[in-house]
Length: 266
Image (tube, rainbow, N blue to C red; front, side, top):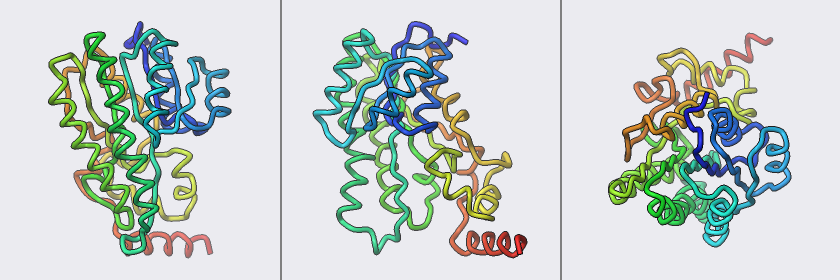
């Protein structure tokens, strides 16, 4: 496994134990890349590096100066950046009419402004070296929506269009920019949801392939987008088992599925 041999990768959003960012980092390391993992929790990053390899870079993705410093430190440590993955995210589940200005600002800072400023920091680095691959982790909900998830889906949809715009402007420099849209994915962030009896049964009905996703599924997609085999830019890769061919369940469907599961448990 050496599809990324000689590549230097920066993965943001890897400061959660066993989260999607860490899974992607492990896969990149297995494929031969040199990897820097970044996020807010230095202790978690250091533990990951001690176990899997790579280097740790602390970063607050809502702060431009921190983003710029992270990119500069990665360039200095690894000697450059060929691949960059943004796997940050915050799964706010809040009714539209109850979402506060503070929550909306926090979502915007992390999930739209952060990616925008991350790409601003990356483009000069990649343009100077003759190209690279930027991968934004988006969401199937940017396409098929989900109730009480409005701030989340709006910012994810915004990054999808940002990907297209940046890809269009900087493709001539060899910079490819793409996004990946998972559906429900088995990660620490979804652990509480997957533990609710009947909840995942309601969701899995929408997946033509018969199961919801794993972080390994997303990591495999990232490997292809990061590799020299990929002749694609400005696109959204739907790595979600066909979910966007159908739809997420509505509130009534979820409530009925949970109620049925609870009844079965007695």
